[in-house]
Length: 196
Image (cartoon, rainbow, N blue to C red; front, side):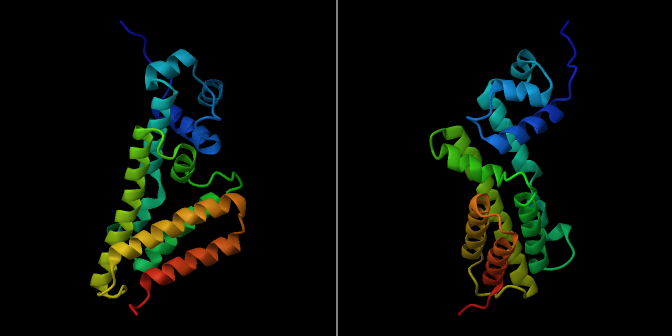
């Protein structure tokens, strides 16, 4: 009969996610993971596979628990502007939490580029999820009249995604909250602007 696990896998994965998010894949050693998770190397490998497997699972957890829910019009009161503002507020809060972590997805893209097909696939899925959420929100806004009906919702969703990703990168080198807020406000204004 196998031994029962003496740890909570979800809690361990969450701690590993935060370690990878703070340091990146290469700079996070197995020893770092053992220290932050509180379980030994054998248990870590037994539960999650190798370091790369654990990283992929941590990346998936990040995507599942991120602020994207703020963009679902069915979960909120208020309109498109309020949803975008709530989402961006969460993103800006993460950028200004004093840990200078930025976005785990953006950091992963910067670290790996297209070197690892599985990690590239995960980052593409994550970014597509955010873009699709923006697109759904903007199309909903077209139905409610908050976004011009003739606007290209997909193009505006891509603009918002690019602005958010740009904010993530800029925040790593210039975490000026006022400047970041100005960029975010301009992106929201552009997404809701009349078609010229």
